[in-house]
Image (cartoon, rainbow, N blue to C red; front, side):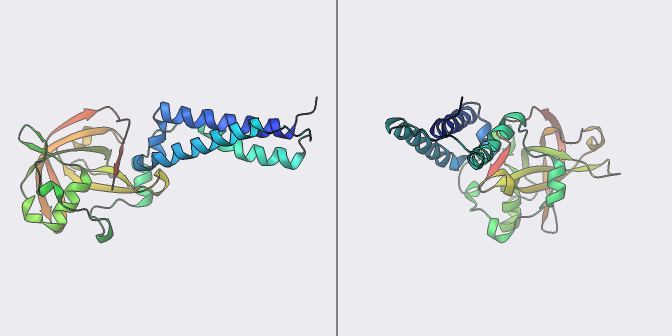
Length: 234
């Protein structure tokens, strides 16, 4: 039995529609793209559904599918197969090292210091700031954060032969995970040697400045489960 070309195209559209819905409902989508761009994916989903409905309404062509068509449709379905077989886990400290960890923000990546102008959430006496905020504040208004008690969280990266400190890492993305920028801040702690590489932790401590780079002198470090949404955003 020969497969009709129209039927093969319709099947490809259905598979893509189901795949995008699956990514959205399983929340895997935020591991691939910046969450503020999810509406573009939903727009693409709407277009695919519209294309499928319009194709159903028109008269099906009886032309059989040929090898070039099979190759083209296979290429279109390959990302779906890859997305189903490979389980996304987010980026690790190894990816951060390969890309180069930024211990300070570039000027083009600086943020407006709204955290200094509005009430910041607190965890007891500690200000809850993410790594991006700490780096930005320490560069723009260093005296406002010097000796401040803060709490922040991220991925542990331990450098070889260093048992007294580690780098806490978060990935900052603008559009997708492929272009994520690793941001880091050094944490000094006597317990650094006990921590596992790539584990998620929450650090409580005091901010010190060494030149333009902030360092947190840890007072307490708690283990955390890996969050579902592990990225920072602009």
